[in-house]
Length: 262
Length: 262
Image (cartoon, rainbow over all chains, first blue to last red):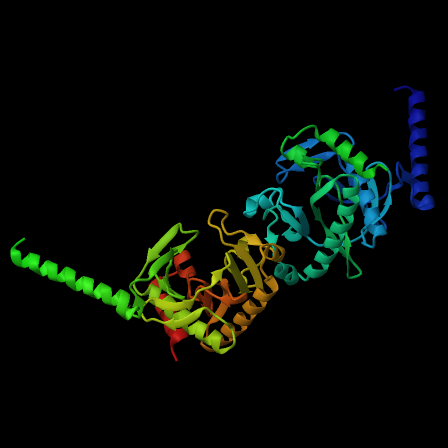
C-alpha cells in the first residue's frame, strides 16, 4: 500500500461517513434501488421471502429460492422472486379495485413491495375449486372433482406439519372463521373471473390474513407458489417443480406474462 | 350308532322342522333371550358391535371385545358389552327425555338393543370440553385446556385413518354441519349436566349420526369406548386400556354403576 492509497482510503472513509450522516440525520429515508431505507431492519426470513421493518410499514423481498414438501425439495432460478412479486402486485391491485382490503401499499420495483404492518394469524386458508394436490391424499375424491370454492384452515406449524383445524378451533384461537371464509370466497370470485378471461383456471389457492385495527386484511402473496393455475390441463405453478413436470423457470415466466400482460 | 339313536335323531329333526315352521309362518317373530328374531340377518360387524336387521328395525349387539389405536391393540373381558349397552341405554334415555332424537327403541336385555334404521353418515363428530387425547398431538395445546365444547368432524375411513374434515367438506358431501353441531352441543349440555351430578366430568365424546326422513338422528353408542369420563383426574374410560392405567374391567364396572345407579 503506498501513500496515495492511504489518502484515497481516508477520503473514502470520510465520504462514507458524510453519506451515512446525511442518510441518518438529513434525508431520514434514502432510497436505493427501489426506495429501500438502508436503516431498515430484517425482522423475518422464510423459505421464499424476507420481511424488513421500515418505519410504519414492512418491506417484503421475494427471494429466487423455491421449496416444496416441507422444505425437503429445493431449487432457485433467476427472476423467480420478480415474477412472484409482479403477479402478487397485479392480483392485489385487482382485489383492491374490487373492494378486498389487502396489505399491499406500493411496488418498490425489483423483488420488493411495501405493505401494511399486519398482526398475522398463524393460519393458512385454502380455497379449492377443483380437487387437486394434498386433498386427494386426505379424502376419497377423484382428481378434477368440482369443489365449488370449499375452504379449509391449516394451523401454520412446521413441527406439527400444518395440521388442519376446524372452524371451532379457529373460534377457540379467537378468530372469526365466518368472516375469513366470506373474504376468501370473494377473493375466489374476483380472481377466478379475472383469470378465466386470460384462459387460466384457478384450481385452488392459499391465503394468509392478518389483523389491522381489528379488521381482517389479506396479507402474504398470491403467486404460482401459493396458487394452482391450469391452462387446459397443464400446470403453470409450483406443481411443475414439485412433480418435475417441465422447466419451472419458463412456466413462471409464461404465467407472469399471461397474468400481468394486457 | 344303534336303532334307538336313529329314531331319536329323526324325532329331533322333525321337532326342529316343526319349530322352524312355527317360527317362520306362525309366530313371525320368535324371541329368544331378549326378544331376538332368530330369522334376523347380520348386516354388519365391527370391532365392538354387530348389527342385525330385524324387520323395520336394527338390533345392535355389543361385543365384549375392545380395540384401540386403529385396532392394533386388542382385549376383551366379560360383561364389557353389557356395561357399554347399559350406559348407552341410560344416556340415550336421558337425551330423549330432554328432546334429543336418538335411534334407541328398546333395551332387549343382555348385550342388545333395538334401534331405528338410520342411513348413517360416515363421519365421527367429536366434541371436546377439556383438551386430552389426539388433539394434543395435532395442536399446540396443554393437556387440560378448557375448550368449551368445540366440535370436530372426521371422515370414517380406516384406509385414510379417519382424516379431519372441514365444515365446507361436510357441506360438499351433502351434510349440514351447523345442524349437526347444534345437536352435538345440546347433547354436550345434557350429558355434562347429568354426569356432573354423579361427580363425573365429560372431557370429550364422539357421536355418530344418521338420517331418518331427512332428519339427523343420533346413532351408534355413548359409552366409555366413545367418551372420556374423568372423576377428579382419573380416567373411567378406554384410556385405561389404551395407556395401561389399571384394570379396565373394574373401571368399566365402576363407571357403569356410577352412571346407571340411582
